[in-house]
Image 1: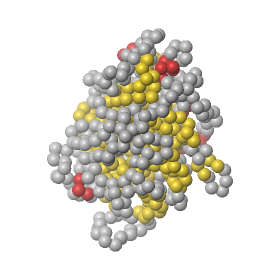
Image 2: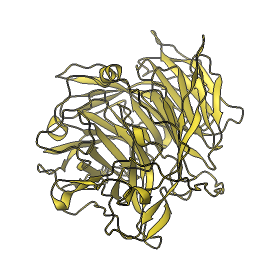
Image 3: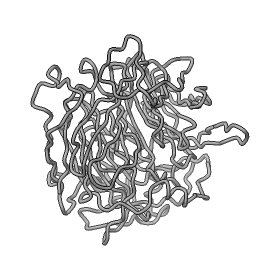
Image 4: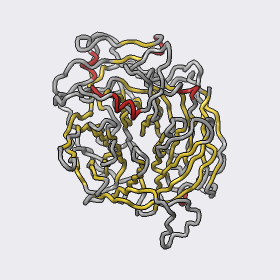
Length: 527
């Protein structure tokens, strides 16, 4: 089996400037044949651009330019379609979030000589704060009534989409807020900052004519006590079948195709049919009485990235946070990782992590569809289905599923500069990746790689499976060290053969309170 990946070498944004974000609109497509989807990109040229991607089961056939949205005055850091796909939000260094809607006719703006425009979008609402601080990341509420953002002034804000009014601002981080995510079950908002922490806020809605969101601090993930030289990790091994996908042979900075449509050559990235060993979370003590070290869980402010894009899984049962670091001793080199929390353990340490990345992870995105469980395979999480997700590091994309938490495929050398964002198509068959080199690439995800799609959708699952026993805010802090002790939790279950084990820790015991207040981090100029 293989992954087909391609770099689309058309003129995405002006002057070869970076593409900081992209998002694929949620649409319904035919089961077979050619399919299409809108893709929005946000660039360093201050513009949002809309494209149509036409693809089949095997590859992206073409990319067609549709429109440019030009009202931002500084670089666009994030673009996101709302869950229903009828609105688009863009966030910029100019400190504004703009909400766009598709017009039923083409609107020619004064002074705009874009003759290739095929559709027009109009500005529905503009959201801004008094500080007009740069906005790094945004996330829609499941009902599309609200949108939250993380800013360079260390504040997380929530805006009303209908009016543009700021509903709430949360000023609890000590450094830039570089990632935000809204729980698909509409109970939590999470933010990740350069202060090396992830904050989780529980949403409280005041009943009345208009809902008023009042998030309260639920838990802060900052540091944990880790056993010295006792946590087993599986790195990316040399026998994991993968291949480098070289970018276009032409010099990328000045020889680009200035056309509005493109067909792209692709390279095959090999993936083992036996699903060979790959980065695995393995958390267990090597001895009954290990020596413990209190260490930070995330990279500090020196990480050269604008983004730390964390995410909930589509069913809301898992939270994945990026830019993680792991080491068993303070003197050892950092291991780049992604930390995983369960919904009922948001106020407790992570249950697993995905180590072995050469570069820090900057974004995680889930396929929007659910997949059937693989037969004769034990599942790490007690779910009736599988979910597939991609981790973007600064120089690679790794695809996993939640049944085994083993890499299904790895794409490397895909861009000349750092990766900035990624997004899945509605059917889960195309994964698109943006980069600071000004290119966008696509990865084709075949059923032979990820398996069969479930007969029900995520929205159907969420509507039929309401949660009634969500965890309460106990105000208690806990750490990995306590959960690893033999008297605190059951022994982890090993899955698979010894060399490919995945160990999962059930969180069952409340832990004593600990001081986890981070030291204030100095500000640094934007790179």
